[in-house]
Image (tube, rainbow, N blue to C red; front, side, top):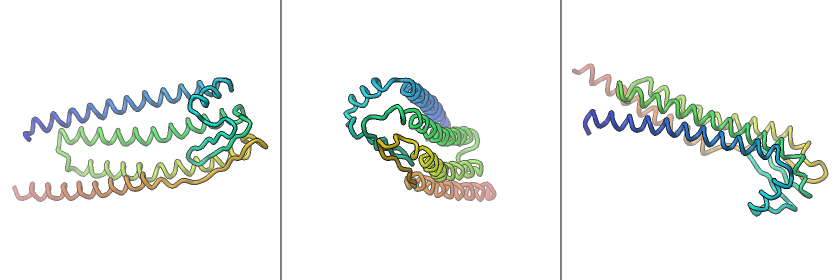
Length: 200
């Protein structure tokens, strides 16, 4: 592959990452709009949606990271706003993590076009990505667990059950470890490149 074709491929990848970021923001915007609609919708609209999704209305189970509610007698008015606000907060947190990753991927591609991939800046960026992707979801889950503990005692008293729990995101941690290993591979590439430059 020639130098020009490599540059063209990296340019295409940069454009793809940019489009992915725009698509991500658009999907989050749609999700926020839907959450706001359900916050102001009446129980009739919510019930219609649940029936369309084939959820049992006599014992509805709402489950998300760190928080779960079992509802009886459809006391939706007592849980709709806190659950949707909770979902909005979690969606915002995970979106920020994804945007950080996309930002550093774009920076890596930019410098790869100008200087090549094996530079210490890219090594540090991959390490930052690994740390954020591996640990930030765990911190977010701790916040979700604490938020669930605050919501749970106030949800549908006498008409349902609610509890908070902690969920450890092993997939995110595994991906973070992989990125740290990749950063080490890039660091070795930087060292080999520096040795080659010294021998010329």
